[in-house]
Image 1: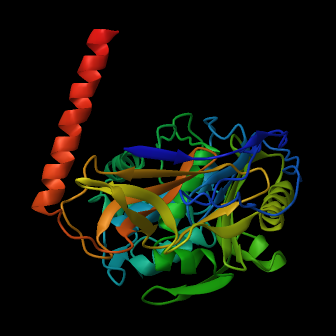
Image 2: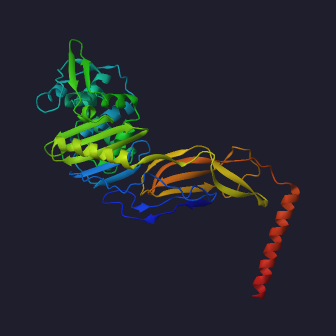
Length: 407
């Protein structure tokens, strides 16, 4: 069986903002009064001058707001987020040394973003990741692609597309590990947010993209560089992630920030210039911190369902949540709690035994779930209970049949 708990009144939440229904969900199957969700704010998302943008909750992946979030656009060096993700997914030894090839060196001087790697130098995978993500080194990205792709950049690009497919990124395609301008290298703001959220689960990735300045070593020299993401220096909550600028893609930025147990990812694609992408990203992240709250949308030990016991319909067992489900909500969020249980309860159960699940959705998007467990145990029905129940059922059916004939 399934039980849906939701309530909401329609309100104008503003252009591009997810959740145009302002509602107050019921707190559970126990019939308690509705609860307020989110801050009491009707603020609209800021107006962003860019081709596309998206704002998501980094913890749950909940899409919060955006404009043209599914438009396929070139992204420049933001591509390197996936490059790093594939390297980390492959479990490559981070201390393994990579010999820089002539192809990797060929991007030094021919493109804006490079760290000046020289053919024949040896650099660890760890340092190449730093050189790829912090100063956006195209030469480092190609060195990684060759190494992980078995000597073939083409093989590595296939791995990038396989990774995108496995993540359900249907509007993303790669033709280069560095984001050089090609018509076939594109993604969307929504897909990039999902990609970034996955990459941030790797501590090394999170550490690197939050680094302002770094130094890497070859066998005979050190190379110093700084992060192209200015938000790390100008916006205290910022924690990353990656810039991307090319003539065709324009100015792009995937940014992340964390404060007061909240963390968000913003994606800005196709801004007019570099400064605009930083201002837009800060405005989006500030909007999130100002208008959303992290709240328990399901509370541990609260009852969300009550079911009749087998062969004893006059007796029931209460099902309570085994754990909290936390999500971000604002004043316009519609929260749903969907309870599912087996069609028939087991003959007996102990206290704490899992008998169902409560799933939480915010504005139609799943944010988490909690097992539902028996608040108190119950024993198997006695023989007399079974006989009485069966006899009662037979009597009801007989009375129904007689009533049908009379009718």
